[in-house]
Length: 553
Image (tube, rainbow, N blue to C red; front, side, top):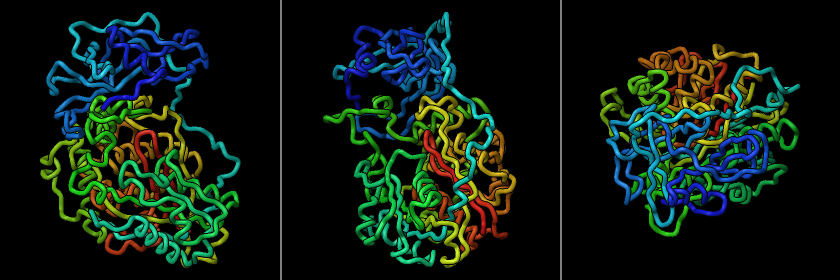
């Protein structure tokens, strides 16, 4: 799977013809720029041009990929993020060649070697016999920022003008082969009824990611389809992919309600990935999973990952997990508790896809996908739809039940919007979303009674636990160890419906649905022994994240 080469990136993809690893560099301040941009992010200078780097690097993190994504690329192989000595933070994704996968380690010294693929010179790296050179000058990114606690930026916490008035969920299953629009309408109509509203009350629509056909099954319906099917009269609507994760669409609805653009916004998210992939496995619906042939050429972020056999977030998150393991001593036995806890909770959820018990031996014995992540660290493709209604807080008397109040929202992204260029690969955008959330409330982590946190991959859940302050950064492994702290009777009950690892990948909205169900005391057999009063729902991973802090009325 090769990149599309053009004037903006040919210096990188064709420099290998002359044996050079080339990046853009600012003529004014000397800052190295990757991926390429027409302006220097350090000094905002516009005089930038290609320059050859030393071709040396060290392993920042890596994963051994065991999943056969492409028919012409056999696993196992090593995907790595490497640091270049020219500048702190100058990194790229690549493959490690010239050694066995088991011989790769964080900090390994490397040298570039190029291979010509149809005129595209792919930069791979092999072990170097000598130490890397020390740069004469290290130019640091002046725009990098930490996540120190900040004062409230808003004069008014506007989200408190919004409530969640109702939720709905369709049939959920594996390969149920139902019309995804029908699933969407099932969830939407259930949410409207749950809130005690009618179609005539709905004057707003919001969804993520909007109507899109690629990858197959990722989106079941967009704004126009639901608008027309329900014959709604709308004052406001929004649907799109560029948002702070899946719950960004709910945050948009909260903002619309808070500023008076709508009174009742119907938010929905639908997937049918299980039916879309059929019996061909997840590679069938993964970008680039069809193989390296044909006319397709990767662009945007995927041009930096697909050529190296890393088409999936499983690879990208695995490298983050590996860096956390290396830095803090986290272990697979500790991470396993996310999956084991989810399976235990799923047994009490009649809609969960996988409800049979799982043991530690089961977890450790299942096949590896991309080290250190195994099959049970990856969520389960599913078909289903979830809907929530965001209403004006002053409409409470019109509702069927006391609404769930929105205490605070976190949507910040204060690092680079990238899977491999984020400043700290032991965490992700969840760090910034969580920091913003706590900046907007006087409640603290100890006040939270239940946490419904994204587990598209189990390591993302660990990052959410750390970012939200249930444990310190780097302490997620010991916090999870044994599983007792996250059990229904533990310090912070986690993913009481089973999460996406066992209940099914409803892609973010399922966590908000479950948080509301628990606050309303409507969880049935999985309802917590003591009805919670404060819940947090977080969704997203990598450069996408949003969190909502919710309270009972």
